[in-house]
Length: 153
Image 1 (cartoon, one colour):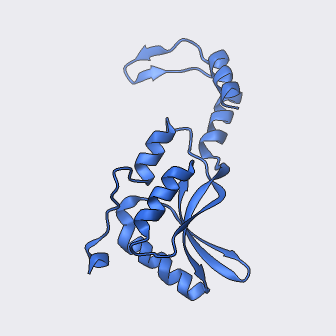
Image 2 (cartoon, rainbow, N blue to C red):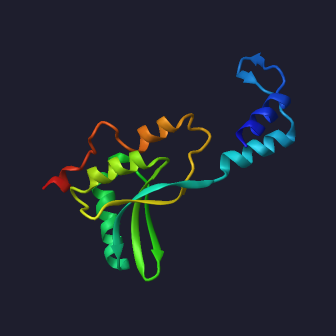
């Protein structure tokens, strides 16, 4: 799919014309419509998350709030899902199990039941150039997760 988009871009761009406002690019209306669609679209793919809670809705909402309060600096997405008869709190969108497992191990200090699950995740947007950038934004790789001072008490 990415190769098709790249080919489409190559065929529809005309040489850029410099001006005082930067670079002006001419593209067909079909190309503009396609780029608008893909930049606004949300795609999912097979990946991994860390599940930190499974239980009643009330308790799941409490654990989600606790995670957001204590780990807000990590910018990890947090999901509250329902799979009858239980609610689940899941964290992160990881492309590989290694990064998800790393985060699960670090979270076990405050969420002892944390474990890695395979699920559909939100795919990285095409503005994110590489998977490495996504990991740097969502999962610390240096062995540390910053915990707010409230969680340490």
